[in-house]
Each structure stands twice: as C-alpha cells, then as structure tokens.
Amino acid sequence: MSKAAAPQIELASADPSIAQEMARWLAHLGAERRLSPKTLEAYGRDLRQCLDFLCAHWGERVTLERFAALEATDVRAFMAMRRADDIAGRSLMRALAGLRSFGRFLEREGKGKVGALSAIRAPKVAKSLPKPLPMASAKRLADADERAGEERETWILARDAAVMALLYGSGLRISEALSLKRREVPRPGEGDVLVVTGKGNKTRMVPVLQNVLALIQEYVAICPYPLPAERPIFVGARGGPLSPRIIQLAMERLRGALGLPDSATPHALRHSFATHLLSRGGDLRAIQELLGHSSLSTTQVYTGIDSERLLEVYASAHPRR
Image 1 (cartoon, rainbow, N blue to C red):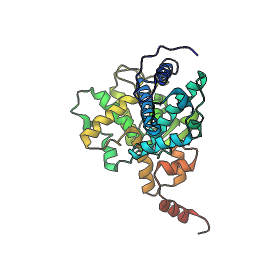
Image 2 (image 1 turned 45 degrees about the vertical axis):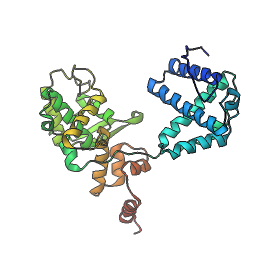
Image 3 (image 1 turned 135 degrees about the vertical axis):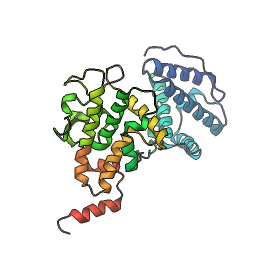
Image 4 (image 1 turned 90 degrees about the horizontal axis):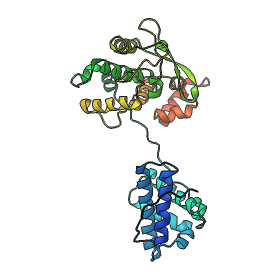
C-alpha cells in the first residue's frame, strides 16, 4: 500500500498510536480512494465520536491494542448512544461504514483485526420518497411565464418549461428527458409517442401530450443553436449538453416563486405523474410500464400506494370476484 502524506491529529481520548493511524487512514481515503473532503470530514468526526465514547465507556484512553480487541457489545453501545441523540439511520449507517473502513485499514497494515465491526448489522434506513405535487402546482412549473421576472434569455425559460412539462406529462427520469434526440420527438400533430431509453439501456414507449410537444416546439423555434436530428434536443446555454443540475436550479427558483416545499424537485414531477394517474383510476400494471419499472413492487413503493388501495385494485380486477 502506498504511503499517503498524513496530517497530524491530536486526540484527547486516544493515545498517539491511534491518532497516527487515523491520520494515515484519512490520507489514504483521500489520495487513493478519492473520497470527497466532506466524506472524509464526516468519517473523521464519526471515528472521533466513537473514540470519545470508548474512552468514557472503558474509563481510560483508547490504545491501538484495546481498539483492535473491540467487542460487539462496545459497538452496539456506541450506536445506541448515537441513536439516543436522535441521529438518523443514514448517519448511523455512514458511521458504521467509516468504522469498518478504519478497521480494514488497521488489518491491512498489520495492526490487528477488529472483527466486532463486521459482526454488527447495519441500521435500517427508511426509504424516503419525493412527495407528489398538487396537480395545479405541477402544471404551473411548466409555464415559462412564471419566471418572466428572471434575467434569463427567453429561449432558456422556454427550454426549462418544456423539460418540466415532459417530466410531469410523460413521467420521465430527468436523464431520459435530457438524452432525447431531436428525431425522437415528434412535432405537434405528427405523433403522440416517445421511445425512451431508460435504466439498463432498456427502451420503452411512453405517450406524450400534444400541449407538451407544443412547448417543446416553442423552445426549438427560438433556440439560437442548431439542433441536429441525431443530437439531444435540449441544450445548455452555450449549445452543449444540458446538465440535470440546471433543471434542478430552475426548480429551486420556482419553488420560491410558487411557495412550494423543498420536496418539489424534478424527480418529484415523475412521482407526481404516477401518483396522479393512480388517483384517477390508472391501472397499476400500466403505470409500471410507463415508468419503466421491472418489478411491480417498485411501482407500489414509488407511488406510495397503501394496502387499502391495493385491495381495491385486486377486488375490482380479479376474475373470480
């Protein structure tokens, strides 16, 4: 293993040998694993908190030998202490991942094997889903006039409105919308279906509303850059590929203007598409196909369907009813 330069670290709860290995570990993660500075900061903070806890738990400063002899009960006690501080499951999972990484580093360096860390099960993390937007709000996001006061070129406002209309109107992922080639998008009145390439390079057909095609055509008509048939139809301010981050920023501006919560993101428009279809009696299997989900259970979780709604679908569709 290459030896990355390590800064000096001082720990009140552990002896210098631990501090030295911690510094070398973080330097290794930054130089060879290329983890972000924020991740390194979080890992370092988690390890410090663990060492502080162990020092108080054992009643003595933590040595390298004692840390290597860590027991599962010690790790569980630390995790319980963190959970008592109302730390979210995702943060607990990151803390455990960091401690395991440090343990593996010590083992590779011949400084002991911290087997207790691998014996602890990762905490469960609740699945968080974007909340659907009200129908009226989702429609307003696709109105370029809502951003008329911004100092941005008209074609950019039209482009953003067209993208958001496509996300809500056809339930596309933002990556799917931005990868659409011009030849794949029919003119208004010349088609009503898109062939989309989704995850796993799988293609699917999705319907597209005529008013959405009209918004796309309005953008195309005033876009100052050439839009060849084989290139993406949506381009950035300099004519290059349009980054998803640009659409996310546009959504953030609209959130403030429309008084929408932070959960109003481009992905929430896809979620709203599915939820609104379902609320109006849409078939679960059909929505699964439209979203490009390989499993019906994915669609159930994605749309936030409760058990009562599933029973309604079952009762109305089962041939033996």
